[in-house]
Image 1: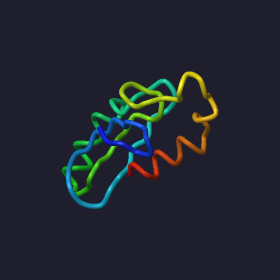
Image 2: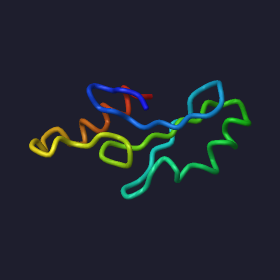
Image 3: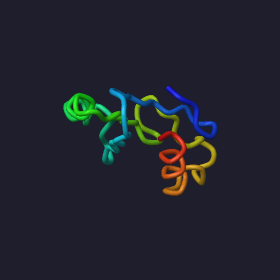
Length: 82
């Protein structure tokens, strides 16, 4: 877990070297990349997969303010966390 702009973000990482960032689709989690991550790590990369905002252990939007859960906020979280 890491804190990004007041959001707790769940991150899985494996390996060392240049970063390869894995992003999941709607209704999926970082776990979708569980087979690709060891492959990339074994080939000299740092594989990083995260749960996007509102998924699993990553904080979502405040219940009383949905304006904090826009595409801009999701992208900001990805850029800050990676």
